[in-house]
Length: 288
Image (cartoon, rainbow, N blue to C red; front, side, top):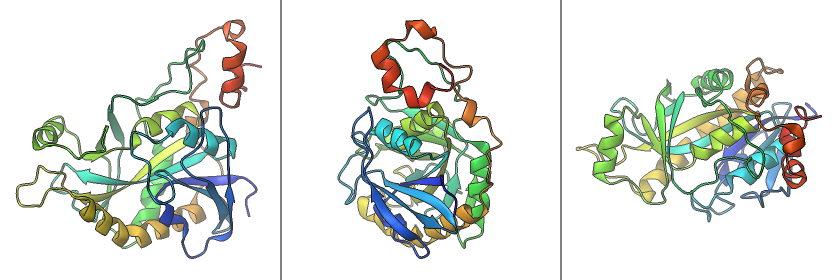
């Protein structure tokens, strides 16, 4: 078994009730940014150490806007995770991305309004690059792992994150389609951007549950519709995660682990001590 967390999964609390997960244990992690959404489940899967975090809390009681994204990502970083896969329910804004399909998106549009988007500030200025917000290497490995299941899988597409918790109006849905968006969800921003600041690889396994509200011949999205599709896809997600854990390359070959190398702009001696202490885990290798 690997001694470090080779893979972290953020999704529903039901995901880690999977066949093959051994020696599972709960870990409470405190962070300078508050409490994560749930205790983190650590266990062995396919001979690898993996971690699971329930984004909306155990029992799903945290809204998308209430999720403490900074605490969640920081906690996984603190446990030594290097790669994060998000399992997300999404609406499709394309005819060919049908309910029941799985999409690995490659672009992201942040249409949220009131969320904490960065670990930094308070005297430390950081401008991280996110031209390609999802790790291409991890996304490719996730695609390969998912294609080994019975699911219909698509690679690529632009993902728009809305504030929620309400679903879209028809005017909004048609507007997003006119912008060229492929998928719509409520949690990928700022999660992806925080993962980049923490120098973690990040990819999304997006489960299409509905056609949002734009499709003339389909019923508008409902909670019941989302839950039914997710329940059907749980086994697919679990199988894909097992495949990924088994086949994941031991070492990262992307640039995600150097995302801050050209992003930190504040002079070392100008960083307030309290700020330095707060984000020490993230910046220590650059400010010795």
